[in-house]
Image (cartoon, rainbow, N blue to C red; front, side):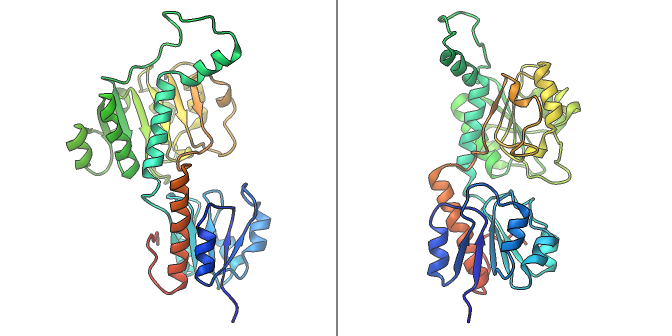
Length: 321
């Protein structure tokens, strides 16, 4: 009897491979850090029982057909799963899992790194000092936003949005949030107020996005909505890149329609919309939201445990479908 094979589409931190092998499964790892190209992925999936994917891998009807009837589970190494055709997987009898919860604190921390960097113009200051052109302190140099007393606007108040809001306690900020549901924790602990998105946009000094990517949230922040924000406002995105119309963002930043932005995700990742990288008033990070050692190790354990559960005939800990 052959050993069930689990394909991991990129190198991942321990302990995923070890856990799979300890469970009697064959771990087949694409030995690279970059995403495999589509032909390579389609060539490697036939006969696999499990597939551990990243957000960069598109799991659709074509891939499911290439994998064949042996495929029983797709475990996404991410909390998001918009790269996976969930109905197609369901029709093929393939379970889909993700890694929720474990990314919350790491991503919230990074959102605050972007908030502080954009508000206090940290990257611009660093470049100035490194260039050798800094001539010393001046009263008007690189003036930014003081967070104390300003308003933090959260678009989406799920796990990560809540964690970002709770961290505002240390900065004495007012908190508004737009979400389909009331968030008692935010309201009780930081005095947050729930408002409609169109009320939130003109009120926020810092607007932080924490929504999943769906047809309804694609280009949620577009030219029309950017035009309703304060000229002194800062836009932060650690959710999903296509939530923001990047061409409209470039125009808004270039024309100082808003003051600054901080992004960890991009509409056409890893490509940037032309002009974005040329702007001094945007902080750009390479999708580091979950890039804390402990977090990535927990994600590694979770994807392995999800795969092992399904292939053992048990309910996975983190089912999507």
